[in-house]
Length: 156
Ligand code: FES
Image (cartoon, rainbow, N blue to C red):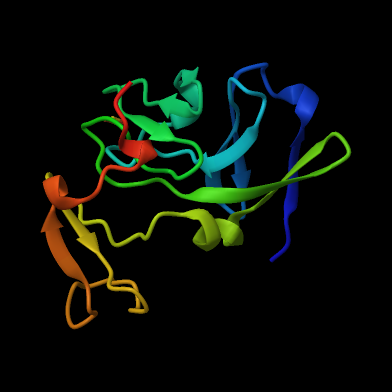
């Protein structure tokens, strides 16, 4: 799959998001406070809510329903109640056109094996196949308190 034109830069707000559909997937194209354009899954990982209707603060987008924020660079939630990352897609440009490659999500997305149980993350072992059923995949389960806090987990 190749990157697809989704809109022009002039269609994006100065800081904010626009919902587009790419290959049937809802995508939020977001211009952050520094002017960087991102493309992330438009559905909150906590419930079926469009993230593009939320506020953009710095490099995060906030879900309007319960207030979880997601780092636009990694897709990781930086505040509860959402615990599961959203996909991050590859963005490129052709003149004024913004192009998004939804297949490129695997390059940037946080591993999709994060369990949907509150307080628990399932992290794959290096080199293992991402877990889909949790059985015999090499995945380990650890408390969310054991997961090192990176910049995406930093509280503001
Ligand atoms: S629906 Fe997005 S945080 Fe609850």
